[in-house]
Image 1 (cartoon, one colour):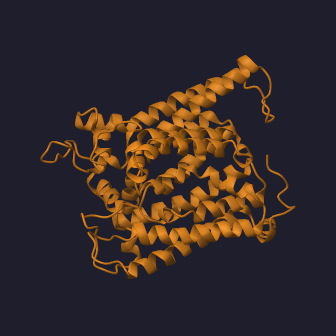
Image 2: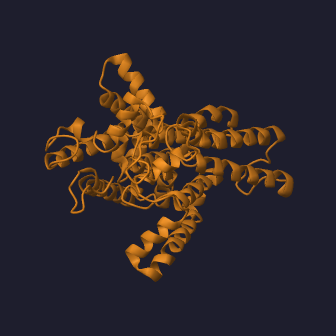
Image 3: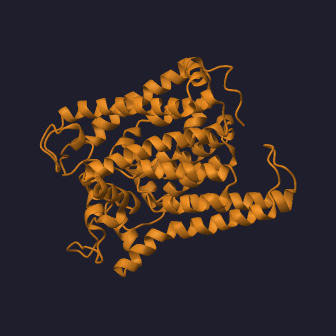
Amino acid sequence: MPGSGLRRGGGLLRLAAVWPWWLQVSLVYLAARIVSACIFMAAALHQGINPWYPPSPGYWDFISIWDGHWYAQAAQNGYPSVLPLNADGSVEENTWAFYALFPALGRGLSMLTGLGILPALTIVAMLAGLGAALVVFLLFREFADRGTALWGVVFFSTFPVSAVLQVPYAEPLNLLLLAASLLLVVRRRYLAAMPVVVLMCLSRPTGVPFAAMVGLFLAYQCWLKFVRGRADAAGGNVPGTKELAALGALAVVSAAGALAWPLLAWARTGDIRAYTRTETAWRGDDLVPFKPWFDTGQTLFGPVLGILAPFVFAGLFALMLMSPPARALGTELRLWCACYMGYLLVFLHPQTSTFRMLLPLFPLALGAALLSRSRAYRGTVTVMFILLQIVWIVWLWAWAQLPGGGDYPP
């Protein structure tokens, strides 16, 4: 639980003692976004010929490339009732891969203000990113003092792929709703979490791991009540029957929310696999659980080490979740991280966009802040994140023609 937050933490902590928390978090987040904007503008100067804009595009055009145009297409034209097909019968890339909540908000803002779709989507993303930072701080305060929670937000805001929080992508909105859902679960406000979880499930595909997390947490709470029958080692109370019923209801709602988008795609197109066929259109292969990780491992490390690589990765991640800084995150956040990483291992095709997919593991930012109170350590991590952000933008966001055509996606 939070401490006084006034014993240690250096300059950040002294400022936190003077200014309100929301102002501190906002300033940290805005400073991080200004740094990212400078990196974007520098990279845009060197952007050559690309599929979207003339060379050396302006800042607002440059941050709108890649999936920003897919979200704009979803906002303007909606979703096809008939899946577009290639000559070989496979499904073409289409808007069913892009969940509807973010495009709907962008379209609504565009209609209200007269802005173009892409500027409206960018504004929604930027505001959602700021909201996410504020909620992330509140979530971190459930487990750490004020100064450490603020450093967690610094790490969250400067993470190497955090630049995506200011581009017209759905990640900022999803992180806002995910952080709010986790905060409500941590505070045992399960009924209040239901509408937030449903909205989260309509923003990006995080519903399946969230439903798994809630289900596992329900099983754990039932074990506390009916098997162990006493307070857990962290000092919590044995859950009551009403609390378990509310948590069970949240598990049902989460599972239904996770299935909502694939079911909507089925209802609209008449194809029960409309969503999964669209998702796999970008990878060129059918969805086979776990297989892409072994294929990628063998490509990178050879036939023997490639088979072992996913197991080694999963084992190292499990060890990290058992470390003292991770244990300080509490049962719910550790379960979320485990379920989300498990979801990636089952369904994700590892590629360069995998780095962006790691953002929902943001609770680990607090674990990184808890690892050491040294200002030198925390400052070094922040600088390292910013340097890696330069690498991410220059290497992956800026488009460059590969010999075989196209480019690595960010």
